[in-house]
Structure formats: structure tokens, C-alpha cells
Length: 313
Image 1 (cartoon, rainbow, N blue to C red):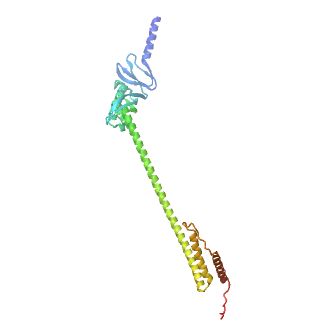
Image 2 (cartoon, rainbow, N blue to C red):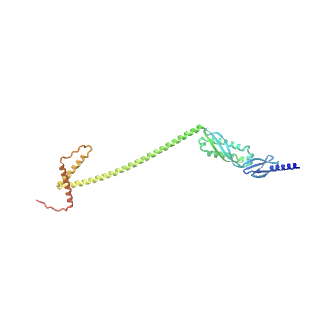
């Protein structure tokens, strides 16, 4: 009797476990009846008919990352590039993902590899190395459209590494060095050009200022010579008037002035090593005294009033 009860309890437990299914969050199960898909079990508790229905595939509905194996790809300009990538996928329809493709992850990996060869092979090496975003976008569009029939959404395709051969890397390094040297030479030439322009502008301004200075100095010199000539003419006129009146001191003044000027030029000459001093210094002193008397007489005539003096017989 006890044995029968134990058997019944065990059978009840087996029926319960086969009929009740609990699906965790982020996953979905497919239910099959006699091997045929009937429905999808979503997160939570679900009930199946014992011995008739069963769980077919257990699928993760979360975003999954797939590594695309590294492969060598020949570019449009016959350069060999080693490429690998990563793919982010998410199952949208569990039934299609379970029954439309045998191995979903392997199918997506192979699809990415073949399209990577197609996309990279249609581009030059420079474009491959500089347009990684364009490659990612083209791969995403092609792979995503191909996986719609599998109930899977390709979220992103990212090129992880692009590695040209060692000789190409060395050539690129030399090319980059040459380009940088060329730019440095251009910048240096531009700097020399600007410096030469600035020096020319400075020389131009300096020449203009010097010319203006010379013009101003010439104007001042001309004005000084004009005033000196006016003073000389005025002095000559005064001496001429005094000589015409018969003033002996005026004649002495004129001759003494010329004598002093000649002696001054003789003494200040660069080639003159010996200065001859006149022996008659007394006559020179008398001449100076005559000049003083002439000056005093001129001042007296200018200050005293003029009176008529009757002629003497």
C-alpha cells in the first residue's frame, strides 16, 4: 500500500514538472507538440500538456556580442589588410531564430566575414584606413537586411582592428615623415617670406623717415643761410653807407673782418701744421680798437638826437 502511494506521488511530481515551466527574464522558450512548433513561452510561468508538449529551444533575448574571426582581405589597390570585427545582435522573433537557421551565431559570423571582404575589397588602402566609420555603416546595412529573415536585429558592426603588412607600415611611416618635412619647409619658407616683407616694410619706413628728416634739415639749413645772407647784406649795407660818408672806422671794420676771417680759415685748415702769426700785433690791436670805437659811435648815433652843425670855413 505504501509503495503505491509513493509511486503515485512520484508520478504527480513528474507530471507537475513536465506541465509547469518557468521562463526567466530576458529569455524565451519555444513550445513543440509532437515535434511541431506551437507557441513561444515568454518570461514567467507557463503550462504545457504532459507527454504531449515539450520545450524546443531556449533563446536569450538580450543583446549579444559576437567576435568575427580575423581574416586577410585584399584591397582594391592589391594591398593585403588583416581585419577583425565585433557584431552586436539581438533576437527579435524567437521562432524565426530557432527554426529559420540551423546555427544563428555561426551564420552571422560567416555573413560578416564575407561582407567584410566585399566592402574592404572595393576600397583603396588609404580609404580603408581612413574611413572606418563608412565601412561599419555599410556592413551594418548589409548584414542587418540579411538577418531579418532569421528574426534577429543587428544593432552595430564595429571594425576592431585594421593591420596592413609590415612593409606597408614602414612605407606609410616614411611617407608621413616626408609629408611632415614638406609642411615644415613650407612653414619655414612662409616665415622667411613674412620676415622679408616685414624687413622691407621697415626699411621703407626708415628710408621715408630719413628722407623727411633730410628734407626738414635742408629746409632749416636753407632758412639759416637765408637769414645769414640777410644779416650779411644788412651789415654790408651799413658798412657801405658808412664808407660813403667817409667814415674811416667803417673801412677799418670791413678790412679787419676780412682779415680775421682769413686768419681763422688759415688756422682751422686740416692740412695746416704751422700757423704764421703776424709780427705787427700792435696793428691788430689797433684794428680791434677801431672796431670797438666804430661800434660805440654807431650806438651813440642811434641814441643821440640829430642836430644841424653849421659848416666851418
